[in-house]
Structures are given as structure tokens and as C-alpha cells.
Length: 133
Image (cartoon, helix red, strand yellow):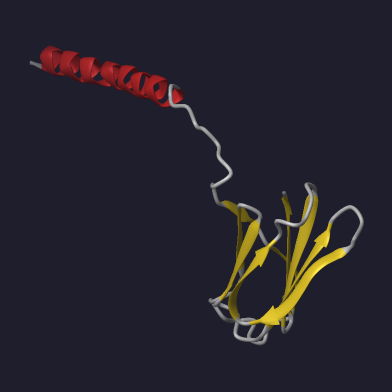
């Protein structure tokens, strides 16, 4: 009986790697087609932070995405007004600047290709990220 159980267990254990290899081959056959309509997240990193309550578990942040040369910024977690500035990364030329709350959309269709930097400043919080057009 022990030999039979050991045989079944070894057969079952041996079939797991074949099943995972089979699924890996299926996932490698998928083709991703990139289009201009896809939304790209712009990661925003903390450059400076002066926390009002250093013991808080909630850390407010902003979120930015790029889609069809339109940058969408979600400022809903920030409690104060935020100033959003977009500059050309190579030259430092300021392309856009606005102060507001909640969220905003910035149309950069008039801007050429290249690297751009986005800065979000709200109270003692300064977030920065880079993206390409």
C-alpha cells in the first residue's frame, strides 16, 4: 500500500512542472500591439516632504497619466492647493504651470517630442516625475 501511495504522489508531483511549462508556452505566444491610445502611468517620486503629522499612516500623493499627449493629474488626496509645473527636461523651459485642487488635464499636443519633467508642489510636499512624448 505504501508503494502505491508513493507511486501516485510521485506521478502527481511529476505532472506539476509539465503543467506550468505548458502554461508558460501559451503566455509567450501572446502579441501586444501598442497604440497611441494607451494610457501610461507617470511615476511621481517624493523629492521633499515636510509632514504635518509624521506618525500618520496615510501618506497623501498625486497620480499622473499620459494618453494621446494629454497629461491627467489626480490631486484628490492632497489637502491643500497644488501647483503643477511641466518643463522641458533638456532645456529647463517651462511649458505649463497651474495651481488647483482635485484634478486637471494638460494638453501637450502643441509640444514636440522629447523628455519632460512634471513637478507637483502642495504645502510641504514636492513630487517629481519624467515622461516622454
